[in-house]
Length: 136
Image 1 (tube, one colour):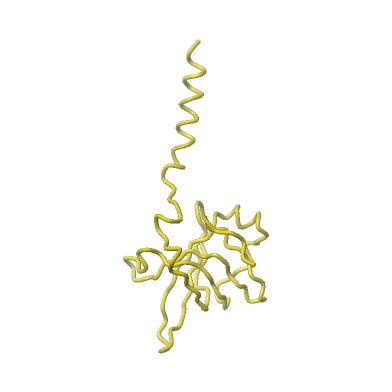
Image 2 (tube, rainbow, N blue to C red):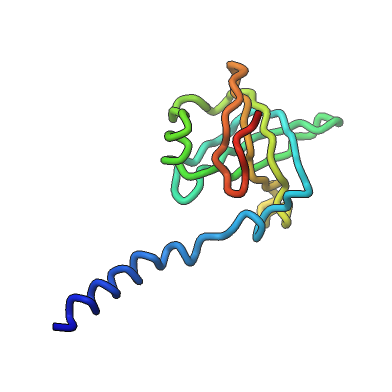
C-alpha cells in the first residue's frame, strides 16, 4: 500500500540529484567583469550540462592567450537556432561575456561565460548562458 508513494518519491529524489550539482552563474562568474575577445576557435565541446568554446586570442603584443568560454547546454543552443556546424575549428569569432571569478584555470587557460558569439558570417548568436538576456 505504501510502496508506490515511497518508490515514486525515491524516483523523484534520485532524478533531482544532478540538479544539486549544477552551479549558478554568480558562483563562478563576475557580472561586473565583462570581457570581449576576438580569436580563432581551437575546439568545441558539445556536451551537457554546458557547451564549451575554446579560442586562441592574440593580445596587443601578439602573444596568444588561450580562453575557454562556457555557453548554455547543447539542446538550449539548438532551440535558439544554433546548428552544430555553425561554429568550426579555425573560425574567427568575437565573444562577449563575463570573466570567471577565478580567471585563470589550473592549466593556464583563461575562463569566461559567453553571452553572445559573433560568427564568421557576421551573425551574432545568443550563447544561452544563465542569468542573461538575448543580446540586442
